[in-house]
Image (cartoon, rainbow, N blue to C red; front, side):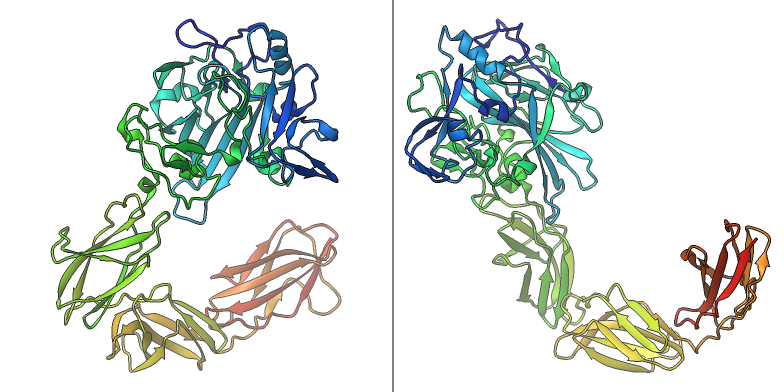
Length: 611
C-alpha cells in the first residue's frame, strides 16, 4: 500500500495543490509516459557531444525525445552517456500552471519499478533483496529539481522470509528489522506499506514527520492511497528492462535539468536506478545509491571494489533501528563482516596448521594465539589466505580468528584449543565414510582430513579385531574386489615424517554376498501361454523366499497400456497385494531377491488377465 501525503501549513508544502486532479505531483509515474510526445510540455534530451543514431550524426543540442521517431532514445550507445541529461521545459516557473498540468496529464496509471537480487553464492544471511523504485517528475519541496527517483528495499532470508527493510529518503535511509513495532500496524506477514512525503517524495515506514537537515518532511499519509490489489498502480520489472540493450534503464545521465541554465533555486536531478551515485567531500561515494547522512563527520567511505547496483552494499552504511540523529546510524560496509567459522586444525610434530572458511567482504585475516583461554599474546596476519601454519613449542594453545578489511574488523571467532608436542591433538577422524558393494566390486570413500598427508586403513575379518593395515596414500577412495564374506575396517589420516595416524573412523563393515538365487514365483500368472485369468481388481503377488535375501524388488506393468504400474522394494515378506487393477487389461510382473551386496536376476515375466 502506498500512502500519499497532502500539503500542510506546518513545514514545506507543494507549490501547486491541484487537489481536484487525480494524478498530483506525488504519484509515482511510468517512465514511458514521460517519454511520450506532448507539444504542450516537452521533455528534451540534452546532448553534450555529437552522437550517431542509425546513419545520422547528431550534433550537441536539445532534442525532443520523439526526435526522428525515436520515442526511447535514452538507451542507445552514445546517447546514454553520463554527460547527457533530460531537460524539462518549462521549469515550473510562477504562472505556468497550464504547462505543469500538461506534465501531470502524461503521468497515466501510477507505476512502481522493482528488481530482485540474489546473492546465494556467499555467506550472506539475507541473500535475497527486492528493490522498489518510484519516479516522480518534480521534487517541489526542498532543493527543488525535476526528475526524482526514490526507493525502498526489502531483504529476505534463504527461505524467502522478509528480515530487514530500508526506506530511502533523499540523501539518507532508515533501516529496520521487519518486525519493528514502529510500523507493525501497516505491515502484514509478507507485505509492507510506504508513506510518501509531500512534495519531496521521501519513502518512510510510518505516518509522521521527520526533521531532515533542519527542514520538516511531512509523511502523514493523509493524501490518499494507492492499492495494488485495486489496480491503482502497476509493477514493472527492471530486470526485464535490462534484457533490452537499448532500454532507458541504461541511461547514465541525470533525469532532469543538468544545472547549467536552471534557476538558482533548482537543483539537478539524480541519476537513474542503475547508475545512482552520490558525491561526498573528497570524491565520489562510488557505486552507492545514497551515502549515510553524516552530521558527525564520522562516516567512512564504502569499499570501492563493491559491485554496482548492489543493495547489500548500500544498506550496510546504515544503522539498524536507529534514528538519523544518532551516530550509530553512521556505519559502513565493514560492519557486515562476519567472524570466520569452520576452523580446522592439525599438528605434525611441532608444526601447527589451521584453516577456515572465507568471509564475504574480508580482505584479510588475523590469527590470535595465547596459552590461556581468551588471552591472546601473539597475533599473525595470514596475508589474505584462509590457511596458516607456524612452529610452536610444546604446550597447549588457544587460538581464534578475526576477519578485516580496510575499514574495520569482525568480532573474534569461536576459540579452539590445540596441544602441540607429545600430547598433541591428533588429526580429526575422516567423515562421510561410504561403502558401495556391487556383487564382488567394493568402493569405499571418505572425506578429507585437514592437515593429513595420507590415510591408513586397519582391517580384519571380525568386528574389533584388526589383523592388518594398509597405507592408502593421499587418496580419499579405494576400489577393490573381495570374495564373499564380511570385512571390518577403520580409516585414519596421518601426517608428519613418522606418519602417525590421527583419530580413526567408526568401524566400517563391508559385506560381500554369495550370488542369490532367483525367486520362484508362486502366482498369479504364467510365463507361458495360456495367460491365466483373475476375477478381482486386486490380487496378491507371491513368491518363495530366497536364502540370504534382505528384501525383494517387484515390478508390475500394464501390458495393455504398455505402462509401468509400480517398481517397489518390499522387506520381510514374500507377497504383495496389488490394487487398482483395470478390468479387461493384461499385466506382467517380475521379482528379484536382494541384500546390501547384490541382487539376483529377475524372475521370468508372469502374465495374467483381469476379467
